[in-house]
Image 1 (cartoon, rainbow over the protein chains, first blue to last red):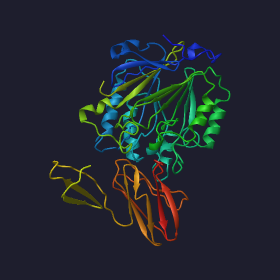
Image 2 (image 1 turned 135 degrees about the vertical axis):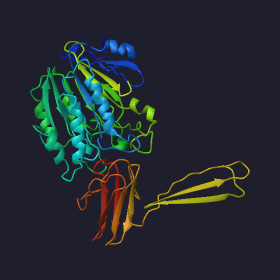
Image 3 (image 1 turned 135 degrees about the horizontal axis):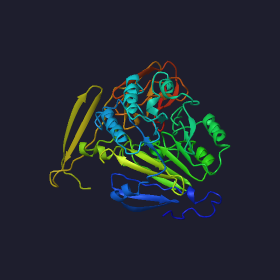
Image 4 (image 1 turned 60 degrees about the vertical axis):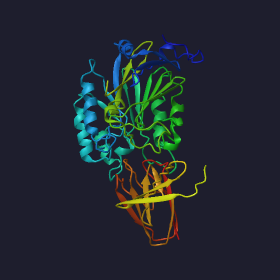
Length: 316
Length: 125
């Protein structure tokens, strides 16, 4: 079913690098993106049927905000527990979880402790990157690095390989400049360039960070000042999947071989760009909250459908 | 826009600690009722409030020796970071505040270190 949206200029990268992306969102529409052309292929029932049964899967979870207790969700720990219960109930255990930041709301030790306890119940390894809420302890990030920074560089960036896919965790929440957006910095970009240097262009890449690497909405700071420099370093690869959190809503786009995906929060929703006076927590009727929270399953199939992303809300 | 021969202005002020909300109602007697609603955060003279990811007032001029206080009214933490590292607050949770005394004259640009699109300025004369 893969459409030839990517044309033959991508010589040597091969059809198998075409990325498919399926979304199972609150609207119930499954859609797929093949070679940059998004099209709807059916409803939820078919989505379930279309879910690949081979390959390996990993989960993306994000923006748990443990410690948040305001009107938009008085108990962020309870909704994380619900999300973790869904992970535990999955018929196929994911290989690992990628958490794209804002584990806690205020970087307090008790918040990290509570998060660790609930995430620990998954029994699945978790790869973390910090959000801006995880580095607001007195020592500006020390608490995060002590818990999650083992084996990482700088403010917590790293890479690893799994099932032939190269995963890169980037930190874009540190040393932000007035009037600017998220920030990677020269040291991290130099590290990224060196990290990718010897990788073959056919290696599937998954890169994840807290704030979107591309500029999604500048007025609310939803983007990364020097994110394009990271994306430029990734351009030569045949399959690049870019995951982030921060904006607490689903957002996707495809550009060439790059697919961008923003996961839902497990704590509270935020408004669509420009639809409210500020990006602050959005209060929705209590019976709708769980349709706005959730997690993403990413399935990597070796062969002609490398990646599929399925978002599930806590209501489903 | 119609001309109102007479209007009734009713102002209700409700005071909460450090904050006042003023509701103004304008009623036109012939064309039914016209309602205007505005909320103004009255604040102490040397106070900057944070509402909806915005510093208010965005620019504040004070004499040397003034202590300026920032108060966060959002559901999300913010902080106050001077561009030239003269001052930097810890993260301010909802209703937390931070004060800094300006001992010398100058222009002090600052921003939120978590959401750097939020910017403000203190001019000390």
